[in-house]
Image (cartoon, rainbow, N blue to C red; front, side, top):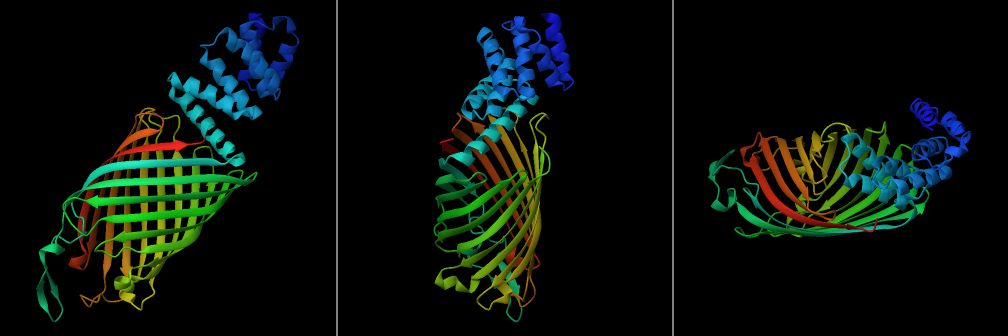
Length: 419
């Protein structure tokens, strides 16, 4: 028995599953022997006789229910049969036992594939609730100066309210989403959410935002296409915040199992409250991105790089408020353990305004540097805690528009999914 099983093992390792399966068929008297059944099951699955392989592997697992290697092969067989629920259960059982990083990465790949495939055939619904507290050192994004020098007027002193104001804040958000299959490779999606941010130490900067996105996505092998429409309604007491509406498209090409590229573009109409209608504009954006994952490396790093170009066209005959924007982003995500996650990123954007500034009577150019960091801990499958930090440094040739801002927040989030 051992000699036949060993020979089948060697054939499987050489990629000759069909030969291993045929060898097994020559020895029906060995069926019921654990080692033989295991290799016979693997050979059957790998050579396309999946149902026979499942029966053989199930016999082995009944005899040795603590064998994660057998359970993993059985999960893979269930996946090949399209029995995604049973495959998920077996993969998740193996994952509970903290297998090596390479095995965990393989399991994650299969679980992601199961989620995607199930989403193609049945509606998937989700919701989240998020609560948090934080601190903002420059709520009004003001320059750290108390006077400016203007042409013809000379020095002008700013009021205390125009200087940076700091405050603690509370945050809450709730969202809903759904993906509804339309055809084998086509599905529609809808996402809606609303959030509120309330400042404790300054007045007039409480922010309410509601967003909605809907669209259609089409999957064609390694290609993913999206067409979407979106809109938002925002309210901020003292600073102009626009309501928006627009649409766009996205294309994702999976180059390999670990690499993908993203191309996107869209147009957004930005409408401000009546007293700020001079800021009304249309923003046209194009983006390109690249993602590289390292699933078998310690902490499973994922790198994201992006470049973008935008043109903001003022629709109120104010070319001094129109601009061209170009920039890029870089982000690194890490998963030290199943419970911990870390993300750090940085960005840069250059804005060139299209006419002389109305205050300074000269051209304006801004450089915005940004950074962000998130530390996440999963308390349960659905509940997570996040520590977030952001930093912005806007430099400008016009001192009134220079500012630095950083925020820190601690948030608790509950996610639910029907999947």
